Image (cartoon, rainbow, N blue to C red; front, top):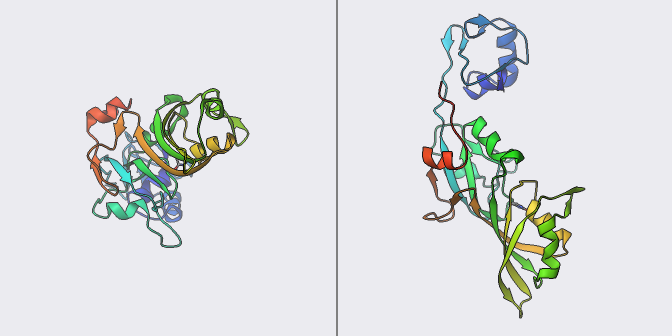
Length: 240
Ligand code: URA
């Protein structure tokens, strides 16, 4: 369910503030009835009209994007830095990122204009696995990594159990590469988890998101997700 003013803004009818005015002045109908109260929520199944004209609803679209390093996961940036949206200039639908990756993190990022899909992917109850390849400063061993399995305190809250695999250790440079599998998606979670075991992250890449990995893509490239792939993530579009 989305707020009516947001739906109107999303359909390019007006800004949210203007949309509130249109609603208050009786221009908007939901399922054939004029709605003048603010804060009304509508679903994709409700029909919305402005001055008798049904609003255009975009087709739902889903992308798997290989986010490069040095790009902001944001729809806009006040400082005019490169954002993930710069890679989707030819896509006319109003897509946005599902969750976020830090500026210097690369890897799998989903992009969509389907709010239900985005919410479902991000909701902790769905426990979607995310696999990260993490380069850390320091020598990893069972002793210093073991707390990650049981959960460490991040922002005052214990993380859910994680799995790790030591992929490579460079004894000369004193760096290690670890594969970490988690299913939460808190802010800077991986970096904070390693901070909690006194190891600092130098490089981070999200290799897998649920059933999706980066096969066939180079940094900055993307491809559409098929219905089968969305279903494999546990998402079933509600057909009305
Ligand atoms: N965890 C982090 O610390 N950063 C990311 O970009 C993703 C997960």
